[in-house]
Image (cartoon, rainbow, N blue to C red; front, side, top):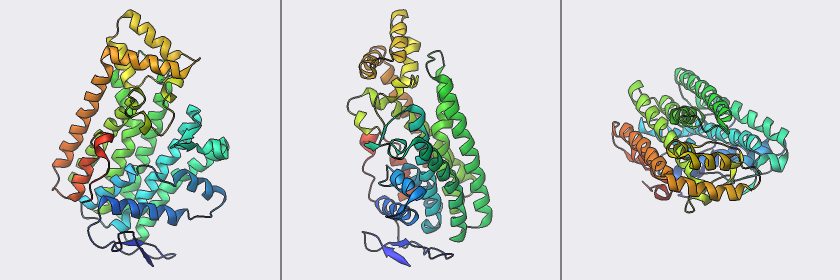
Length: 357
């Protein structure tokens, strides 16, 4: 059974129990891909679900930017894969990402996410922990659904190994981030290693899994993985910059003072500490450890980062990794999907909306 999308000509797969989804006809645009992904979430967590499923629907729908599932889909289409067959993996990786956010919000004591109550605020911390765990398992269950939709078993096995490795890397990166809190003596290399695990590992996994499930060879998969790695680092650096620039603070999915309130030495803060004089270093340390007024600390930190040139340097580092990502993708045959991936390397203000073709 299929349901037509809002475009009217691209069937959305609706798999009967035990059956295989229909192939998606035509050349899907980024807008169509988002519609298909949203339909996949509605299939997994339809309106009216209760219990654990209700928590998942609240956490996932309405969706965020769908960046990671879009990476899975575009990577698969770059190598000639079947969109309908990889949609479950794309939905699964978004679930894993959302599960990690649910846990992050508990760790960071952030009561809001995407402009509304965080899951632990709406349902309770214990419920959020359990629901987040279930989404991680669902990420792997999605691969079995891909197999039922026709993806060969050897590809599913390789994708599973990538996902397992990425999951471990993400946990290691998150653990390292906790050890860095309150400590400005860490190097930029320490930060990049943490960011590569905490954030870039999932971006890289999305690209590798999409390529593998889509039938890409090792060369294409490695290039797409390299693209995802550098895109993830650029994304994390830009995310670190959001609270310190008035033009982008509204793009954050969490409170702007979260990093400071949790004493996280993000890249611009570490860069400022490296180049600051003794007095400025003392001010940075005091601001990072300020437990009385997070908003005042945020304004003070913004000024310190401006004075030291740390914001400009961090932007340059993000742009450097974005260029490396574009270089990797440029070595693959040009298509609408390599262009869509390259478009994702632009800054948030320049990267939205996605091109229609």
